[in-house]
Length: 498
Ligand code: ADP
Ligand code: MG
Image (cartoon, rainbow, N blue to C red; front, side, top):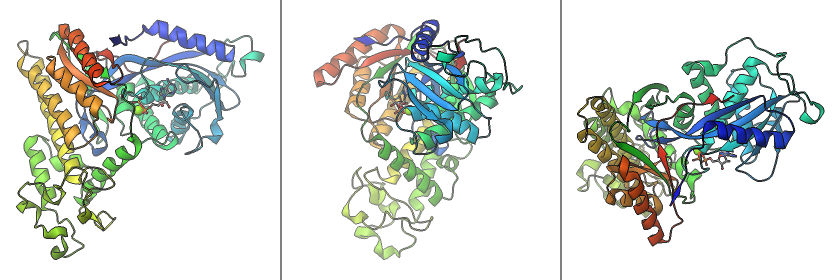
């Protein structure tokens, strides 16, 4: 059974420094790191203004860096073949940088675009303990470590040694020719929120990947020992102490190692479904439908409000396809969407277009019916609220096992909703979750975007090993690639290592 332990920070920093020396023939000026994450609860709601509950993993991406005078960004990665990649900072633009280098070079581009400062070129060496493409946010870990590196370069002014190492045998970076005399943005939480916004912009615009903002926020703003409750309406955040250890519990991460399938288009379609629905309801985000206390009752009322919306206000009632009546009379309670999760029945033709805003959007292009998307989003927001209430109970000494068992139930319900309503799970994730439950986990669910990637299981501390073994056995029985396991404890935010 394969465990992936987090390497000690010093060891990983030394590895990055060694890779830097090997690539560029000089000493790094500084070494920075940022964590991957798992999301305890609140999936696929960050872009709908929901509150999410991520924690930083002990697994980090480390970046060794030194400045360059010529405006070039060069990078090597221990996780990617192909040696040094380079792009002039001036040439960075949407669509202009191929592959993984976009996650590096996009960051100083976005930081400049966000008005955070002016940035020199740099040489970088990357080494990650966060598995790539496993739904644990290696992309944000990379961006956020790079953001801290450029932030420090600009704030501390590291012009010396900025030429190519070959012609610069003395690597002393001391003279501060471009010193800006301001503290780095990373010095305050508000500054880190601005860095996070830049990293989101970099991933959206330069790497071309849609991202809701949770990953960058937790990587830059995590607190050791805490889950971070991030309100994605304004990205305000509050740390919540969650001492799993004291409760005799552990959070097991299961990297299914299932290849991501169709992720980009599928993510974008669901996101668009939610955005269109919010607009049809006259709301800024879906979260706004739930009012002050987003509990289960509020979720029900929001769905009723959706059902009451005229599906095709642009067309007379008589033209409602198949002659189905208004939503409320549908015996299944799921209206004209109820034909099945693919939502692609022939009656759908001509109804998916971009009509006036008040026309109720239905499903599109193989995504689930919009009503199913909404049911997931709103019930997930209610589960997060319930979880926040439970967190308060955890502080009582006699908390075990009641509230923890209820938290387990919330995880299980979240998975069912992501699987059945949002349709972002896959066979490997479902198997990991089912096998973990059967082996005694209090609760388990997929975490991250889905379509492959990782699941989490809340387990008794002594059960982590047997639950992992049971999951590994189930995978072997199904002929799936062996999964990899990690233990998640809430770890520290992006930081300077040396
Ligand atoms: P996740 O964030 O869940 O790991 P993504 O698809 O969002 O998955 O991001 C993975 C991509 O990020 C990789 O394909 C690569 O382009 C880039 N990346 C992440 N970490 C590294 C790394 N250590 N070295 C080079 N590229 C990386
Ligand atoms: Mg990512």
